[in-house]
Amino acid sequence: MGTKLWVSASDGKENTVQELARSKRVPRAVALYLASRGIDSATVDSYFNNDFSALSDPYRFPGMDAAVKRLWQAIRNRERILIHGDYDTDGITATSLLSWVLEKNGAVVSSFLPHRFDDGYGFTPESLVKALESAPSSCKVLVTVDCGINSNPAVEEAKTRGIDVIITDHHEPGDTPTPALAILNPKVYPELADLNHLSGVGMAFKLAHAFIKFGRENNLGGYATELQDILDFVALGTVADIVPLLGENRILVKYGMETLRRQLRPGIRALIEVARVGASIQPSDITFKLAPRINAAGRLGNANSALELLNASNIVDAYRFADMLETFNSDRQSIEQKIFNEAKKQVESLPTFKTSMTITAAGEGWHQGVIGIVASRFARDYNRPAIVLTIQGDEAHGSGRSIPGLNLIKILSRSSHLLTRYGGHPMAVGLGLPKDKIAEFQQEFEQYVREEISPSDINDSILYDGLVELYELGDEFFQLYPKLGPFGHGNPQPCYRLNRMEVIRTFPIKAGHTKGIMRDQNGETTDFIAFNMTIDPKVTWDVVALPHINEYYGEKRRQLQILDAKPSMS
Image (tube, rainbow, N blue to C red; front, top):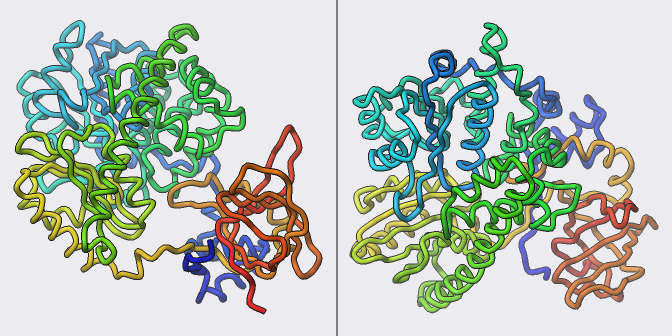
């Protein structure tokens, strides 16, 4: 406690803060929050305009018109449509969303999710054959979701079989264009840069939006589906994939959380109950409770059990699949902890550990389904980019997680001569390489990261929005607070520094935590809670904290969640 570096994100932005407070009449604490995120008086209106109607036209995407026309043609001709997804929450929700919309409008649909170990990642010629074999009848249209942008061999194979391919994806494209009927990925088109944060399910939603719009405008259908009824899928997949909650993602997740709370689907209701999530579901509940259970199916078993859960038409089947996911998740936690302990011992025993800016761990036979979570824990706990590899024979397969400001795809591209494959996002990657190249890769990884960031970037620090007085976190602030969300990756909760706070009362709570009432030098008081910290009432404290409304048995009270504290300087 008190050993972290505290950094104000609003330093040097005083003019922006003053202008926002003056011209937009927002409280100073909100102005600090906005300025810290690069929002000024010219862009603040668009930030607050997160109504559903602010979503952009899906027909901005080149190829969208051809895609939806082909889907409606398939419905008219009773041609089977095959959806090829992915085995994580983003890919599973995208698959369920699109199949639900198409089936509601009369389509004959089959879905295929690759097996993490048998099929590997992505849309490949092998997964194409397997998907076609699993369908009850021949397919003439194939739609990829959350994959396919670099799957040229699979697309070519599909074309030779007379299948039209529609790619929907959000991963980084390669240099060679995919020869598909339509390519729906904002990262392919510079004019769609404002949509680069969309997830795989976000792209599936764009296609569904255009599909419904086209059907209604041309009297073909589309009336069986309301867009807001499918946003529960979008919220689940978007938050789970840790894409920034910026731009249209804020709108999609805002309304998606509302749909999620309504629990329209038996599968959603069963998942929420099994995960013991309260009625007021927050994005953090997706991150820590719902998504891990959905992901566990693909990590340890077959992702189809998660897809069956989301597609369940009755509550009995839904509970059966939810219980399966609960078992998978429990097993996953045990396996993950064992691997993490082994990897941590390996990493911390290295003589260069304290001076390294990266973490690389490798082990024989580590479960491939959980190494991504282990990498995430390393990146979080040590604030360093981390790669965790499992060695299987002469090959190593790995997952990597980054820290803010470091693009892992860019780093891996510089070591592509050592890798048999790599891909993903700036913050999360997958890779493969020969076992005998691990040491060389580890050296290059450290070297290239050092060229991108400095040692100060990996210091254990807390970024806060500015120094405030307690009275500034009053009625005006909390009236605007909901409009700043939804909170998550890329759009964190408001966080402030408050100086010279006194503890005037504490309440019984679990050992190691502190809960009570604080008072500032002006006599203002507030509830507070500090996890894994003991806040001594005999000391005056400077704190960095998250202000929020705490609801307990129906009573709502303002509370500071203290992230760090240190004795005030006299």
